Length: 382
View 1 (tube, rainbow, N blue to C red):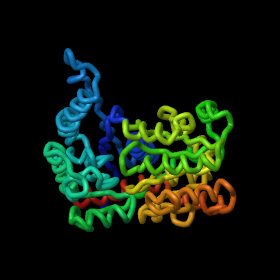
View 2: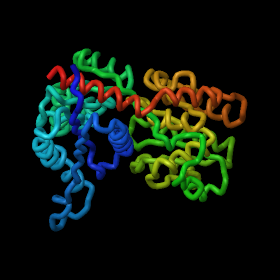
View 3: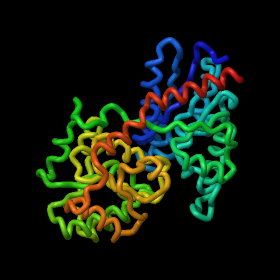
View 4: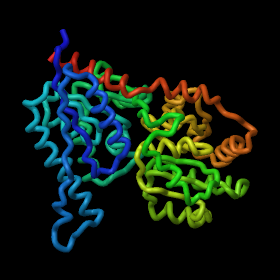
């Protein structure tokens, strides 16, 4: 028998972490839970990252000092806050697996963790693929052990599930499939707060390709820039809008070497209404990643009606199905031909109806119901 009323603590990333996707997942869950009225009481936990090390004399707001404050929060202040919250909730949901160390401070038998991908644990489970310093591996091992202690491990795709099982990290009965959703801002019609016209003003009406994502290596911005440079030789008016990445020195050097600096627009972080406007206005949205846990920009773009070209990865085919065009990972010539065919109208790609129908399969309300049902059953068993 499941409990009539559930007290659920939701542990979110500190906003200062600067991970828009994790902010979105956590806040969409809170919004979804708010619609369940008296059936559930939600306790959001979200600490600030204090300026402890950054506040020391002669250190200041340097990047290393910020990372030190992050670690103090991740492994000190936040676990203490979680420990104090134990009597106030029946179940606990950790939104981001990189905070799975919080499980050590919580009742593991009533705690779940959302595992978005295995990147954070790669240095432990596949050290040959991602060698890291000893201190980093110790941190990753602590996070992984927290994930393994949790009673429930949620995942967005079957690809993530298969990887967890292949490495023997989690037993099948503890895994719960809870795909992401698309926020209401992502739609064909403009919504209040859409500043995309203002953001794109520097392009002066020129057509553009869009990429949304970080500068992490797996996002393959090197492929993005190379493909764009090839396309510009055929479409001189074409521009590239990249949203969300702070380019590394190597990436900046590549942009300079390819001569595309003046054709690249990188607006600051935008609210969802404006990001939706960017999707709607883009000629094509590109996802050249070599690895993904889900690929949120894919369904966001589809929900806005945008054509999408994505890397031919099992996880992206699982999410995008027949609503996207796929190209081999890091194959510059194939990517260039595929995108050029869409720009030149030699290929039409999947119809608009297929794009919208695919995006409609992913909703935050379904995501919320899946999590809530899982925690109700968990508390009943516990």
